[in-house]
Image (tube, rainbow over all chains, first blue to last red; front, side, top):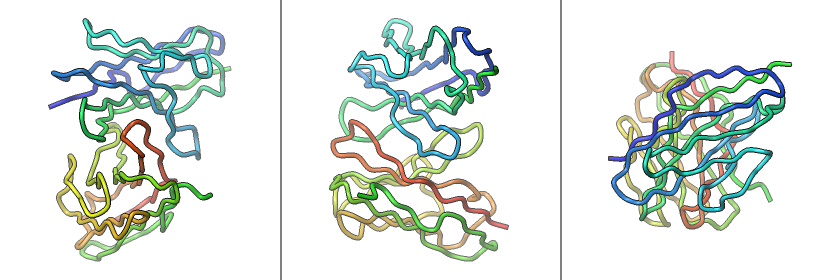
Length: 109
Length: 111
């Protein structure tokens, strides 16, 4: 069965510092990976997908199949990046997502 | 264009009581999902409906039932609530499983 692991429940950085949120997965097929974000008092929403290979709000994530990882990175964190971040995996077929445990990011001024 | 709506927003139940959480969408999406969100456990899939007329169990279905009433509506029922079901419940939809759109959530407390 597929599994998504986010080893850090809490992550705290200062404004302007680089930030990396870790995500590791296990899946025997070819997965599709996502990062979802939940800002305070807002709905969970898609941040980015690995297949689109785009940068959203300065965040990027690269799928590393060798290390089975999909870490989320931003070179200069902003206070408005403070949120809960979830990594999610979609199987090759079907529409289900498997979510990680989430990482609460706090960016301090 | 409301997107995904959930009712109620908050609910307190006593152990053994029953209730139904409602989810509706106006996005014309085929697939609908119910998750629960617990601290340190992330989002866990309770049930989902890939299309109108079908429902399937997710990761944590015990103690819950669902009904896909039509394409727009997907309800989650707790027949006999237990304190372990205290959680935040989210409904989500997707068109072809590519991106999921979430509702605002229902915060349920079972005493």
